[in-house]
Image 1 (cartoon, rainbow, N blue to C red):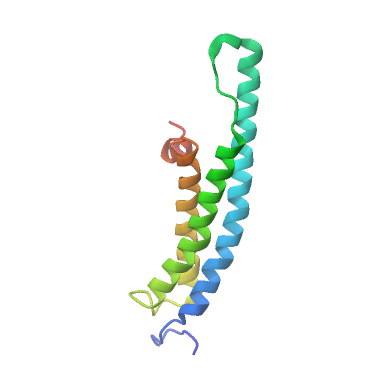
Image 2: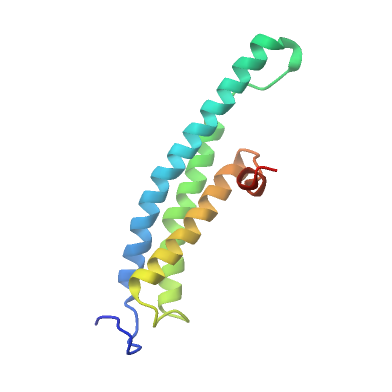
Length: 131
């Protein structure tokens, strides 16, 4: 059954497939984000170690970064399809599978990135707004 402007219902399986595809792409982006944050932490640690050894800056903990990436990836890969399935069976059933899946995938990716930063002790709002 295809979705069209006539109001035919969205196939939840197609919406889930769209959200899962976007979740896989988001996981790659989360891996790049975690790596970039780790590199920034290592550069900052190295700079403080050279310029001010008594400052007491903590070295990067790779296990914490792995936990943060796993948390963000789980939210993106599980939350997106669950949200797409729920929306496609509920209030958004007339929107079309692609729109429902992409919307759910984007929401899950943002939630995953926020969770990744929160596990690392970074406020995501301050990170984005630069305050």
